[in-house]
Length: 109
Image 1 (cartoon, rainbow, N blue to C red):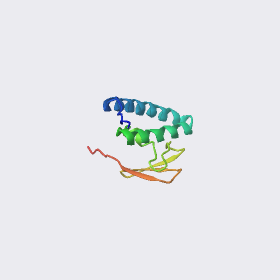
Image 2 (image 1 turned 90 degrees about the horizontal axis):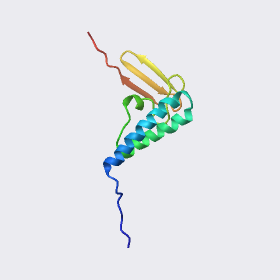
Image 3 (image 1 turned 135 degrees about the vertical axis):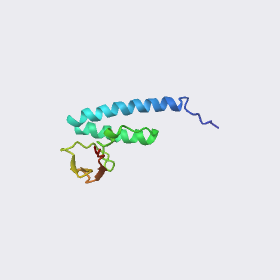
């Protein structure tokens, strides 16, 4: 009978590789938004997958560029609509019609 062998790599090494991959995919997502939408869509899907598998998330600014329903990139004006009303930013994915509302932080002086 064979024995199950565990990977010799440690969790910290896998997490370091995952962080490096997330940073690279974030750069690809940002540069791909203006050039090629299929590249940006693939990078967005990979970012979500790595985040779920390793528990390492991208920056909130990057996460706002990805639709969580259709797992595709959202470029304001092309693939998403952004509206700002009193204290609320509403982002709508034009592919799947998902609406995300986010409260604005207002500083009073």
